[in-house]
Amino acid sequence: MIVCRSSAEIDKLRTVNQLVARILAELRRMVVPGATTMEIDATAEALVRDAGAEPAFKGYHGYPATVCASVNEQVVHGIPSDRRLVEGDVLSLDMGAKLNGFFGDCAVTIPVGRVAADAEALLTVTQEALSRGIDAVKPGARVSDIGAAVQQHVEAHGFSVVREFVGHGIGTSLHEEPQIANYGPGGRGPRLSEGMVLAIEPMVNAGGAGVKVLNDGWTAVTRDGRLSAHFEHTVVVTGEGCEILTRLQADPAQVPQAVAVSERRW
Ligand code: CO
Image (cartoon, rainbow, N blue to C red; front, side, top):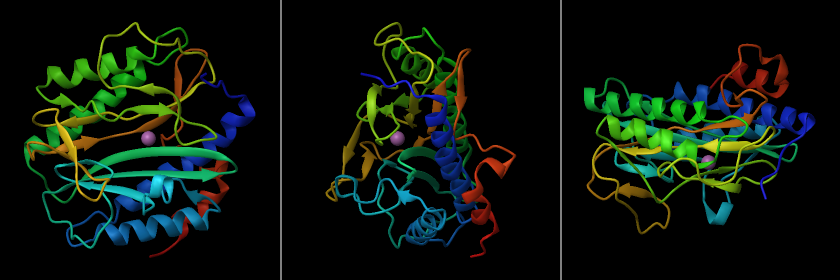
């Protein structure tokens, strides 16, 4: 069953998703050569807790951190460590939080300093693929229309879509129905309707689609060792299309907890 949220519930989802987006924007400023992913994670956790929220990933099936920090050939679920970022790396930062019983989830892939043109292209195409997937979200559309739009865009640019991980419904749990694959034919699966809340998260590889999970039990890497990128937005289906709950709004008044975040100095 896919839950359709009331406007009061959507207000809470908007608040927590705006908080996640605002914290990711803060973390982006820490993504510089010499920084460690552990430092970024510690800041993320402090910002989440300062806002009165809780990290959504920490403790989830034993995951040990607030963010997933996936560098270069790491696809998703990279565990923050004392590894230092170097110029030319790409870093995927994925973060979830829970506030007032509702979850937010968002991811971005960030270049570290100047990166190679092919890395830049991978980030651009992955972000565009997420946009195409989001454009497919409207009442009456089918769940698989999202993945079809993502795959079409990715493959048109010669990149490949990861199959092993999917997007998901989100609300009072981090992962709810439906699962949202980033590939496959459109016109399948449940119809979308107003109030459904979806986390859409394409993972795109520069080379082959194959991935494997390292011995830490979490870190997914490309089989061929080439770069991977990941972007994620949480959206709610509206009457006409959808609203991107993790798109940072100019007016922070709606997110009082987040005002303190941007004023905090580190
Ligand atoms: Co997610």
